[in-house]
Every structure is written in C-alpha cells, then in structure tokens.
Amino acid sequence: MTAHVRSQIEYQKVHVLGENNVSDSPGQIVMLESTADDEISLIDLYLVLDRHKIMMAIILAIVFASGVFYAVSKPRVFDHSISAQIGTIYVATAQGTELQPIEPVEVALSKITETYIPIVINEYVAQNPGAPVPALKARIPKGGDIIILESRAVDTEIQQNVLMQKVIDMVVENHRPRMEIMKSQFVTELNNARLKLAELEAPVTLKIIKKQFELDQLTRSIAKSELTDDHLIRAKQQGYETKIQARENKLEYLKDTSRYLATELKRLDQLDELLKQQISGLSGDIEQALKNRKGSAEGVDSPSMAMTALLLNNQLQNDRARLSGLQERLYITQKKQREQLMNDIRKNNRATEYEKILLRDLKNTLSKLDINDGNSLLKLNLTISKEEASVEKFKMVRQQQIERQQRAIENIRLKLNGLKATRALSEPLKSIKPVGPGKKLIVAVALVLGVFIAVFAAFGREFMLKVKQKNALAEAE
Image (tube, rainbow, N blue to C red; front, top):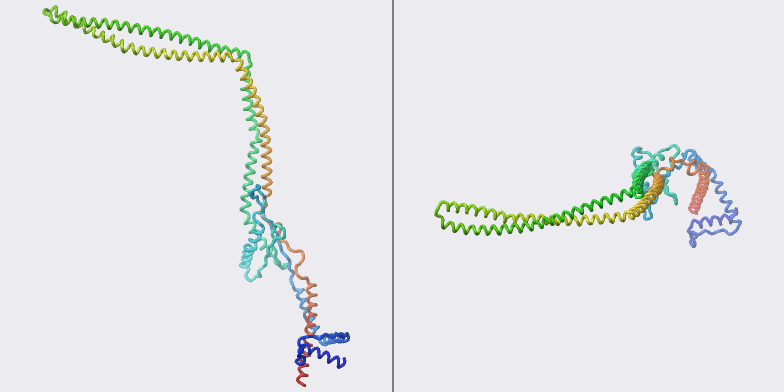
C-alpha cells in the first residue's frame, strides 16, 4: 500500500471521527469514487478481521456452544387445548320458539376470562405455593360458536389439563339449572302427551262410544217400530178413542152435576119462599098473642084465667124461639148453603170447560195421528242418520286426534333431543409436535448471532486500537 493511499485512508477515518482539523463538514463520510480505492478498503477490512480471528473464533465458539446447550437442555413445550360447546335451549320469540344458546358465546367467554380462570388459578396457587403460575387463555374462533381454552406447558406437566377441565366444569355447572328446568318441562309435556295418546287409543273409549250408539240405536228402532207397526198404531188409536170416551163420559157426568146443582139452587129458592111465609105467619101469630095476653092480663080474676094467661105466655115464648130459628135458617144457613152451591156450580163449569178442551185436543190428536206419526218417523230417521254420521265423524275425529297427538309427541321428542347441554367436545388435547423454535433453528440462530457478535467485536477492538494510535501520534507531535 503506497503512502498516498494510506494517507487518504487515515484522512477519511479522522474525517469520520470528526477531528478538529476538519471543521468545515463534521460528521460527513466522503465516499471514494475510484474502484481501486474500494478494493483496497475491502482488503483492509479483511486484514482487520484476520488480525482478530482468534478473538472472533472464541466469541463464535462461546455463542454457538451456548446455543447448542440451550437447544439441548431446552424442555419441549406443547400446546394444550380443550373446546367447549355452549348448550342450546328453546327460547320464546315473536315468531315462536327458537333454538338458541343457553347464553351468548361472548358472555360465556367473558365469564371464563374474567371469573372462572382467575378462580381456578387462585385455587391452584393456594394449593401449590411457589409453583409457576400456569397461563390459561380462552378465545372464540372466527365465525365459530365454541370456546377454546389454550395453555402451553412442558411435556411432563399435566396441571394445565386439570385446570382447563375445571374451567369447563364451572361453565357446565353454571348452565345446568336452566338446562334441567327446560328438560323437565319437555319430559312432563311428553308424558302428558303420551297419556293422552293412550286414552285416545284405548279400546275402552271406542267401546263405550259404540255401546252408547248401540243403545241409542235400539231405542230408535223401538220407537220406529211403534210408528210403523199396524197393531201398535191401531192400539194407539184405540188408546186415544178410550181416552176420548172417558172424557166424554166425564163431560156427561159434569153436565148431570150441573143440572143437579141447578135443581138444588131452585130448591133453595123455594125453601127461602117457604121460610119467608112461615116467618110472616108466625110473626102475625106472635103479634096476635101479644094482644091477647095484654087483654087477658087486665081481666085475670080467677085461677082459671091465670092458668090461661100462663099458657099464653108459654106459647108466646115457643113461637118466638121458632121464629128465631126460622130467621137464622133463612138468613144464615140458607145463605151459606147458597154460597156453597154457587161455588160448586162454578167449579163444575170450570171442570166442564177443561174437559171440553181436553176432549177437543184428543180428537185433534186422533185426527192428526197419521200425520204426526209420519212426521215423527221422518224425524226419527233423520236422528238415526245424524247419529250414524256422528259415529263416523267421531271415528274420523278420533283418528285425526291420534295422528295429531302422535305428531305432537314427535315434536316434543325432537325438541327434547334438540336440547344440548354445555359440554366439552373432547378430552384436553396436546399438540402432536412441540411448539416454539426447534433445536436446529436455535443452533442456526446462535451461529449467525455468534458471527455478528464476533465481527462487531473485531471492528470494535480495531477501532479502539486506532484511537489509541491516534492519541499516541497526537501526544508525540
């Protein structure tokens, strides 16, 4: 290397260091433009590295050995994970019942991260003081409806699986009451629906209906035979004729009674006239007797006249008593008998009118017996047809009810099967391969890192030597 080139290199180094004699542009690096200068600089760099190759080899060996030792001694770390599926229940909505999660996945994730994981970690730390705190994480896959718990641990550690299972168990236990209530409701509905189906399918139910229909049919048949049998029709007519004859006889009896009561009323009138005549005659006799007694009382002067007066007084008393009896009979007894007789006449008249109405109704019924029987027969046939149609309709409705009940049972069973409890989708899983950087990668990184550190150390040492030389030259000048 010539002196000119060496002076240029020294000048550039000093210029990079910012010496005082280069004050016009401190901190700037002047690039060499000639190709020859570049080649010399690379050679110089090589010479610098060559001068410190022993140090570089030592550094590289130390770093590489450290990397190899770390790669060999580093325990294998595996990912542990477990997935949980949130259970589903039926929720009432405006459109009906829909199958929805017991609670939103986001809410369950929040409970896991904010409550369940801290509880499990605190229990573990309390039971294992001084042990490293395991890290548990929970997440929801993008677009998914499950929750994944994850943790990393060395191959020999199994507490992560236990802790993650505890977290899942807490979620399951939190959702269990709502699931049990919903399931019990559907089980009750299913049992009730099965009981109702058993009642519908029971032969006894149909047998009772058929028996009732047969009894009604027998009753209708008897009634129909009564309307169509000639002997029964004739017997019915004779029955009406007998009733008519009885009513006519009773009506004649009432007429006779009416005539008798009218005769009795005339007799009462005649008796009243007779009593009035007797009262009038007896009153005259009493007046005459009073006059005679008054005259005889003035001329009583002998015992015979006194006896005559006494007899007249007795006769007068007897006449008065007889007059009183006749008057009582005329004004009281006769009046009472007349009132009783008038009541009997009114009762007899009412009974006569009533019997006339009954007799007229019986005759009308007898005259319309054939028409009424025909109408009754038509109504009876219509009733029989309706009952037969009712039985057929009952059978059809019963079959429809059975099918509808079977569908209801199937729907309830499907809903019951649609209920899914919150559960772990599998046992805690361990990754097949260890996670983290592999041994080869660690060794390669250590090798590259050792090279960089060695090169940096070589240039650093060379720089320090140049600084010392510069200081020595400065002191010599």
